[in-house]
Image 1 (tube, rainbow, N blue to C red):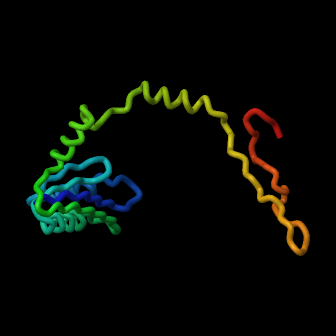
Image 2 (image 1 turned 60 degrees about the vertical axis):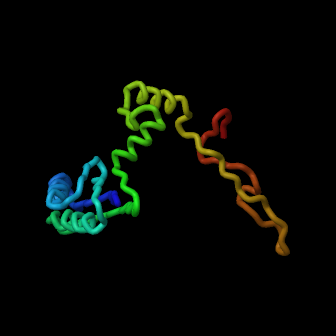
Image 3 (image 1 turned 30 degrees about the vertical axis):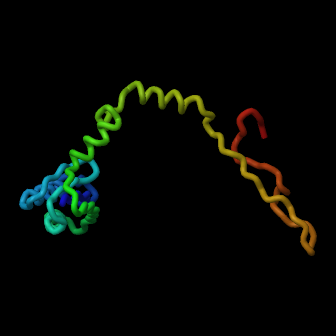
Length: 158
């Protein structure tokens, strides 16, 4: 059996979190788990869920800040032994390439060009409800079913 978990230990403080996160990650060394820390969380693998729970609790306790938020997600595949690297390799085989990419300057320039071709302050017009006949007479929106927009419409003026 293989257990894969995603652990987040978030010290809440006004300045950097790296000291608290480093203490939490260091606490994992005392347990029979493998782990990899990413920019947003730490992925943990173990043979049983109890070991993951103990490691997560130790990581939580290792942060000495006044307030700590800890999240743990567990994937417990009973009866199957598959490591995280096997899962990534399966996706890589399907893609025919590594499942990662560095952002490129060319991509950033393309995003800027696309954004600059849009009108600056275009919002879709709002449609007011059409007036309806009631016993008391006509009622309805202030604009009587007309279209109105706060901003200048593309291709027209107000």
